[in-house]
Image (tube, rainbow, N blue to C red; front, side, top):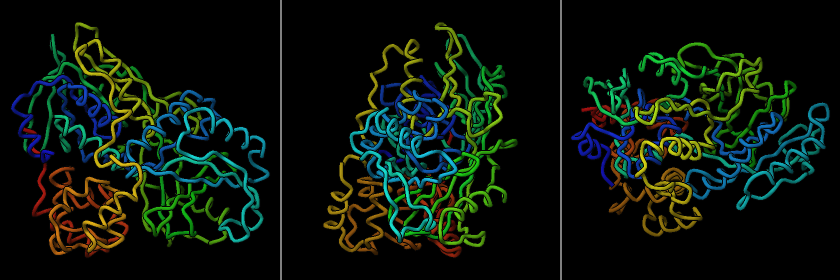
Length: 509
């Protein structure tokens, strides 16, 4: 694989592209990856880091969306369930099965309704790899309130959301795409045969040409159309804030919980990073800059209240170890309830066949990003009749060319027996077989260079800078990994110092 800077050097010699994609979240990188793999010349620009906003602030789930059945969103649930199976096969290093426990509260949704909903969930889409739902009696020593005795179990999947973005970007770059984080589209003008796109990075402004422009800017999608392109937006966006809190581990076991609240919303309680529990999410309308979203005290109290209602263990604000919030860019339906706004996506195509195309993405969810990308390229097919066929459904993401993680763990143990068990587990869950790119040739721990704590070494940092566009400590500790939860302030400062000396922003020209 070429280094990210090598890819840049090769691509900037020709500033004419088939596709310029605006936005480095999951939908943007998904489209860029699919297009590059079909032979199109692709440039992707992102004003911040890849996955800097919504795509790293999710509940970390690949799921059908059980609660969407109440909104009669059967097409979305079916597509999501089918994608769940595809993604689980494509990325077994960063996506793995998760069993959910849904306790039954008599005064909320009735038992028959939950049973019927789960039956539909089991059969509406594909389910080749995951066990179905079942009713269970809760054991006396379970972590929930003693009076909760009945529950259901069902399956969905966990995902490292930011790494899903990174691996798609890595795969796109390997196929020839130019990936430019920290590069903002400040303007685009339609010419007779192409778009003339102005890109601003730290080292100045450059112009590139594109036969088609893809606006996958997430919460900024309407603003890109109106401000950068000086066009009317065909749809409005409703920005909905979702916040999460991270607590010390609340219970033993690898199961997750889905909890009903009296307001008919649901809250997920998930095992997180071995030592922690992730709780979320909320739904509230958001006004303002999506880059500045933060959890509110009211949201934190709401989540703590739901946990406190169901679990025997008491929780309070002092136990919160980390918090984050994201803005979901949902298609505005002018409804009153943010929780009921559709999570489905809409693709808007502007431009006649004899004009440069503009395709904008409105809405969407993490689980359906791959299908969204296929749909986007199907819409752009008339502009690129020579592009290759769809390919992503059966091709693993980088590092994911295996079926069982234990196989990779065994190979790593045999070749690098001096790695700690925790290092091996994290490498497999973050990189899969990609970790050989920074482990190859090492014969002892000292060969990996300086250690920063929690198994993070200079060799891994060099890999992240050269191949995954990492520049700052936040890039490394909260997106390429979640090591920010495990390193203390001194260790995090050492990571920042190392990156200040060794990392550099990918140039825009």
